[in-house]
Structures are given as C-alpha cells and as structure tokens.
Length: 193
Image (cartoon, rainbow, N blue to C red; front, side, top):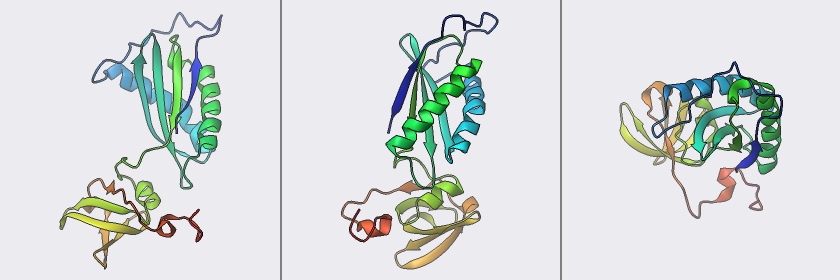
C-alpha cells in the first residue's frame, strides 16, 4: 500500500550549518543508519498517535532525490486511507524538523507484506489464524496454525496438537500463503467479506 509524497526544501529553509548527509550506497552506510534513527525519533510519536507501530525506516538514493520508506502496522491492519492519512502527518513532521537535510525526498508509507518475519509478540498476535513455518529450539522446523499469542509466547496447532512455545524458543516465523483456505478463519465475516 504505498502512499508517496514528494518534498523539496522551501525557499529560505536551507540549513547551512547542517552537514549534508551522504547518499546511501549499496550495502548502506553508518551515516545512513544514524539518519534513519534520527528520522525514527521524529516520526515515531506521530505514528504512535495514529494508533500504529513503526516497523521500519529506510533511506536510499533515488537519482537526485532520497527515497524514505516507512513501514507501519496496526492490530486492525493498514488501509490505503490509513497510509495516506499518516503520510500527510509524517510529511508535516518531517518538514518541521531538519532530519532530511537539504535533499529533496520522496516519502513512501506502506504496511508490511506477508513475507515479513514474525519476530515480535505483536507480529505473532496479528498472525492469529494464519499457517506459519518456524524453527523451535526443541522441535526443529515445524508448521502450524497460530491459535493465540500473548506477551509470553504463542500457541500453535501442529497437526491437531495444541503446543505452547515461549518466544525465546522460537526463531523468526514465516506466514505460509494458503490458497483456497476458508476466509472465515482469517477474520472475514460469515458471508466471505
């Protein structure tokens, strides 16, 4: 769900005392990582106020511009309208702070894809009802449906057996894409919508 906005410094907004950030190169740079941390500090509160979680911030070169990719998520998901609304708020916050420097940039706000690894309790909670593949410390690779997730661990249905795992015993989980799986188990209403 990309939502993008383009920005350029406004006349009179140049910050000569600000060092120009280096553009990202293949593999990234240490300075880019610091830039991303500073950007996260500015936009994190805006995203939290919108009832969302900041999943990642990435800055890369895109010709003469910089591309700022922000990934957000929430328990209710992220619609196109949500992405557009938070994009406008982030744009205002970034224009008011010097974290993007003097380079023009494009802001892209999206939600995580199905290929995002399940690493935090909130990721597992949002995957309830989904089939996942994960490596467990005592069981090796397993495949099961997420039945429940809380702050301590996750309960999986593994071939009809309900098994509880603490997060420390699990690697990063991966959602398995299912075709033809009944939608009612994935949160749809009884009429399939």
